[in-house]
Amino acid sequence: MSRRRFTLIPAALLIAACSAPAPAPPAPTAFLPGGRVLLDAHNAYPYEGRFADRIDRALSTGLPVAIEQDLAWCPVEPGGEPVPVVSHETACHGGEPSLEEYFFARIAPLMEQALADGPSPDWPLVTLNLDLKTNEPALHRALWELLGRYERWLTTAPATADGSVAPLDVGPLLVLTGEHPAQEEAFAGPGVRRLRLFGAMPSVPPDEPGALPRARPATNYRRWWNHPWRVVEPEGQRAAGEWTREDEERLRAIVDDARRNGLWIRFYTLNGHDGEGDGWFASYNFGSEDAVRIRWRAAMRAGVDFIATDQYEAFADTRRAAMAEADSANGR
Image 1 (cartoon, one colour):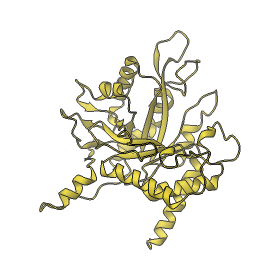
Image 2 (spheres, helix red, strand yellow):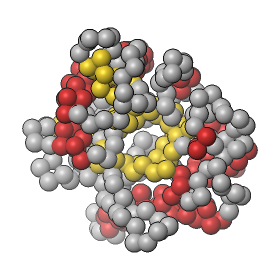
Image 3 (cartoon, one colour):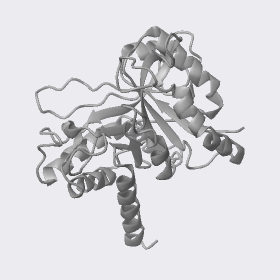
Image 4 (tube, helix red, strand yellow):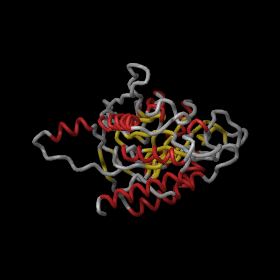
């Protein structure tokens, strides 16, 4: 099956290249940083014996979509061997489904149909956002082997000796993981010939409290930047007041920094609801759907690649409305 290859290039390098006499590079495709805004379905897995439908709800909003899965190292059955399971906790309570059972088996029909249909501008159709709750070497090895069994679905890249950014071999599934240095050693260290997943970029430490985070240039392994919403509104979701021009400028400055450094960017978690919500954390709550829709739209205008929320359907409705408004304004 043929695939498309693309390179994530920092914007500063693109500007320099455009000033040279050589022909301008082709326009970036939709999946590259800044090309599309996706729902990132926060905590889309069962816990507390509930919420088993979250992955179906996320997929029902339409493709492409990003889906978060938190991982722990636990046996699925008492006395069994540990495997990567989806869980919000590091402790094993029993009954946590394996990542392979809950996620990979569920998306298998979508992935196989995508490969049968051939490469599409919508690839990757699904971005799997992994949050590893622990970092045992055994968990890393098991995850690496699991991804190897499904490598034909994956968006991958050849390893480079100096970490320079290599072209992506684009498949219907993209896998992202966190910042932890042990993950980079396991997934991009010596002996790895092809990257199966891509880590988050740590920020440059701020010069002073409240200063904007600063990005580092993308590497072959580290291709995305992950932030709590507090970097935009330092008071946090629960204490946030009216959305202001200063808030919008702060958001845009952070996103623009990601673009200059060739990184996808994600913000978490933007919820707005009365009461406790359906298993949602109070710390992420702006207090009303109107308040969170203002932030969702601001993040869309800024070109945030992955917007994490527990309100999958409401976000999808807001994005569709915003896209329809943009099409109407542009005469489409």
